[in-house]
Length: 127
Image (tube, rainbow, N blue to C red):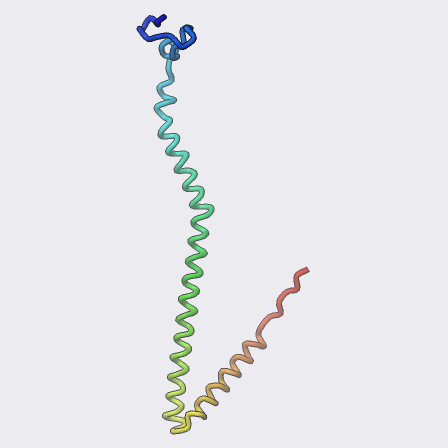
């Protein structure tokens, strides 16, 4: 058995045809918009994931990296300043007595550490 358009009928011998073959109007707008709507949905999902997860992770990573760079530069600067101060004290204040330069610089660092230690706060007890 065949349809009037010359196509063969379904497997069971019944007249199984596509809706367009039966004279039902196809919805061309619905299928034509499907790729654009799918792309918009994928774009929305990607933007949402980026805004909710990726951007905060990037910001945290930046803070960690910049914090490590600043900490490393601070250690380098403190080391170089200590060396320069030892050299200046050894040459101009205590010529030939480097132990006095070390003692004075050690005393300054101990007093600074003690002052910072007194400024600390007590940790809150968790209940």
